[in-house]
View 1 (cartoon, rainbow, N blue to C red):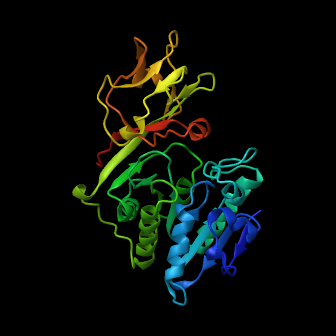
View 2: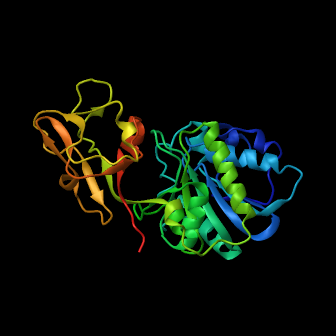
View 3: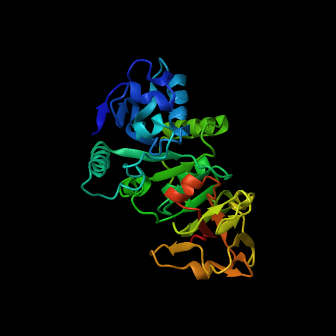
Length: 332
């Protein structure tokens, strides 16, 4: 299933993400040689509607046209079929960023092949590039809080999120053998996100060594994801003032990365519904009532929480989640 190449096909960099399928036969791992080894590894288009990673690679390699890369670069170009239709993933496909923890499907075996090959080649830094659909700052995510991981993450942003759920993500698989980060760079198609990611990858290519000292506390805003919030299929929801079981304020995405006081109302709830959310903690346990409850038709926060990745995109909410809940994280 995996196409492995050592050079870029002619005119590939001229193609936007939805047209890559016309040249590449499927998911493709590209190895490009530079002055130093081992390579920086970059994942793009694990979600087909998140184009910034590919746009940043196009920009970066265009700037190095005719010049040697300062360090070798390996790029995995993921779900081309979903990118063709500008979808996160297609019906019948798995989510390409939930299948890196093993398994026997063709897609899971492909991800294991990538892990094995890159581990054998050696990897300097792993970068997985994503977009989100809500109003969020650019931020980095790590699955370990070791100094090397945080040093790389803060090259992208002082805002860093530590998480261990969901499992099966690319960064978690690679974190076993190299510093691995996920970067969230705003809405797909924004030039600011493309520029930011391009500069970040270039900075990683120029690193002669990864610092092992602790990141200065004044240079880091560290959060810990403690729960994921989903809406059960049986409940209707929306942001359009129609009669839904769960009616959110259309400005709710402005709550991202803001601490909400206890008692904050985030939605109106149809009479008779006692708990319209499915909230799971890091252990997968149901904790909905610890965070939100219904009072007089309003969905109120039970404690101080910091949401992230709230989106108004109903398709994304159904396929993934409404948001994640975070707390401030203090390093020992």
